Image 1 (cartoon, helix red, strand yellow):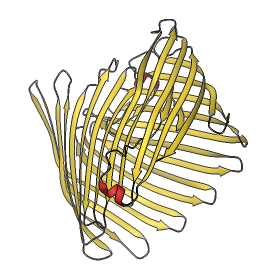
Image 2 (spheres, helix red, strand yellow):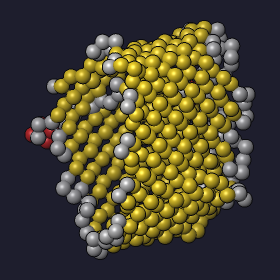
Image 3 (cartoon, helix red, strand yellow):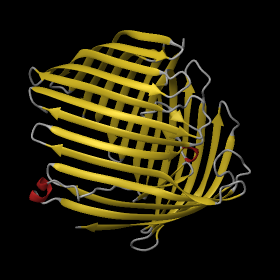
Image 4 (cartoon, one colour):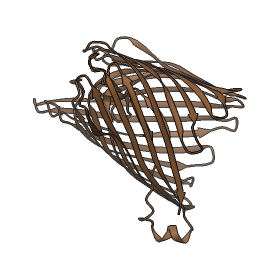
Length: 454
């Protein structure tokens, strides 16, 4: 089990697999079966438990429980996972009660063949938004808010003719998002279905023709009962030279349609294109990306250059570009910087990213900065310092939020099975439509995993 503390949450991450549902193939091929029971107990004191009111000070108890089973053969993998927390808050203006929070259930099945593969997964996650920053791909931008987000998702994918002359990849996904007790009026429940297909025709070892298409339908439970449909189709080319130059280019037609019960209908459509060029180097890669696409927030165009370097003790990567959104007259900078280094007695990891995204018809510029330094004290203990900053800025709007946090922690192996982590954390929320809030927290946690085979 990996113990993390992101935002104000003592999070237990674990993986489960159920072998009782194994097919006969598992038994015939001699499956590898593994189970894990995970337990953690944490207690913390904060002068602002839920980041809403400085008068809400008190103690929080978090008990993390999980159980995992896994069965795997040469061609198949079956996994089912569940974990949850029992959280109790005690103090001024708090519930003085225990609740189940931050629960996750995951099921996964994959099968690999000689030239085909099949995958299916189901996931349910319940996130306490007042304890963490949600930067989620299916949400589209950073969420800094109070309340709860419950997500249910299904994913299925199949590939035929993999690495052959003609290859087809099909993927489908279903998402259901439900918000409770949030204060951001732009957050509404939604249901989404998406499907995409990619076909490759390899003419020779260097040239591949590609055809691609996709469809996404999103129903929002807002006051206008908004429905957003997005589709695309196009043709492209992949090529690679003997010197390691890789080129992928697509010409597409994008169509976006937004309807409400007003009634009203807004349609955005037109030609789009994407071009990615990568040059392999002995110590990394050099790349260039050019894109112009249309979605429910209008046309977004960007250009970006990238470079990655491998070093004997780590790596360095950076990218720099500009993006232009239809609703904004200004060019916004996007890019990133990543650095990692193995030190004699520790590690240093730093990351900076700034990217554009869309949510509910609006465009956002999301920024994330993190620095993580860990140091070994001796064979059983160490310390870690973490700094983080995230922000979400609406392009052409006023929905801007940001959060800064700092964590200093000490870890120690108490016994062969038990680990301990203790430290302090500072959080500052800066929200456009609410008062700024601070939180100072002292935390202590112990944990252990029990692993067994059968």
